[in-house]
Length: 67
Image 1 (cartoon, rainbow, N blue to C red):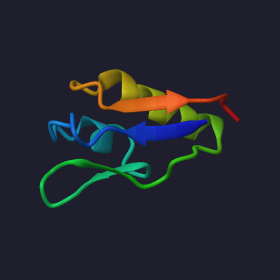
Image 2 (image 1 turned 135 degrees about the vertical axis):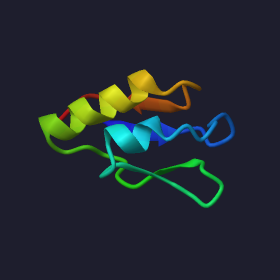
Image 3 (image 1 turned 90 degrees about the vertical axis):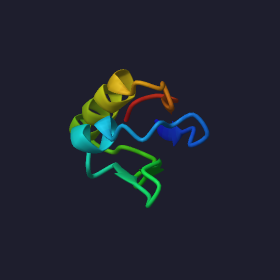
């Protein structure tokens, strides 16, 4: 499973960081940074899925199969 972020559409709400701070951060402009592109455990996958689901700009995506 791969986590990707579209920084061009990110609005900097930070919901991903609040949901999964081990996977997401924000740069100085408030735009998403992906810290961990491949979640390894079921818990990491669940947190990443939640972050993708609550992103207000739909700038996050998951692709591929879960580990």
